[in-house]
Length: 420
Image (cartoon, rainbow, N blue to C red):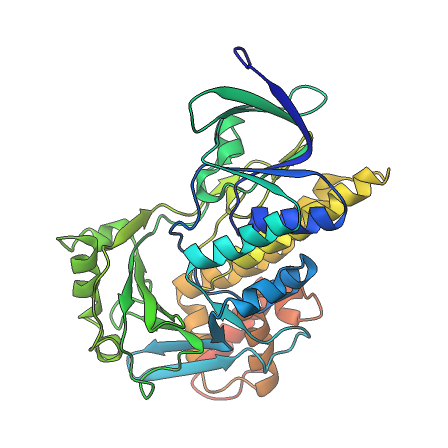
């Protein structure tokens, strides 16, 4: 790493000031660690992934950021609603199997991410906006990161621990050749924000609405209301399916929505006042979630799919696990990052993976819309949808694939009640 003018030192260096980076910083500052965050953009800035899960509230509380989030006035969220043709199924996250929070928020990420970043700064973390990571060296005794200052000059930072919270930018996976293709089929999304004018008789604003295309079970729409009369609206499908529609992103999105009578009714008074965006091939994976003195947080490591809004919850869980490992190392304990960080994190990710795969295969949709499974099973499913994918007391966490296979077969049977 040649041509560096200065070398600075910190205890923990975090790449990215998004949710996983900010929460990690809050947790580390509680330990007394010196924390620096490098963020290539300025905040607020647009980001997707606006519907949180109740499990995430635990980590906001642990990081000392819960009051900041509550006082920001985001849209209260207590569940998820699913629609397909004339079928509808609502899940109230307060009526769930797992203990813990049953409510959370739907947030405009530009505002939410800034609230968390500002809270991290208040806790004593240093955030450097518009500072871009240009190179990383993890071969030595301590990781060294080369950085470009907004004025163009470069410097380096040496840290005892390096956390990549760069999200879809995936800084360390790209620079350290850790990227691995996802085993999920390639999908894309079209989305925008609208002034929604949704009639409360058509939709509960305290729930995310997931609508399945009546003719294509692998095409689905999200509708996420915010507290200011606006909402996030998007569609997910294969690139081939989305490519059939011509025009701008908003024109294509509206053309697909026009094929869905129930969603067309919900959005009949909407004002489409914001340019659309697209995202393709978003699923990602890596060969390892950690290495010598570094770890990958949230989407920098693995991203599955947005259907159950698991991204921010997984990001927060990774921050919590990584901060706990760093604390133990700092106190002289031996830490195995594979068994103490990667495997516990992956356990919950694998639970989500089973349900996401089941959604696209169609079996979990049968479960969602079934009227036949017991209230107890419904509460277990609600816990998964609420983000409690690490609660192994829940049979659908302990054995997600087997339990889901049995349940969907029972829901498909012509008679009888599911007792999986």
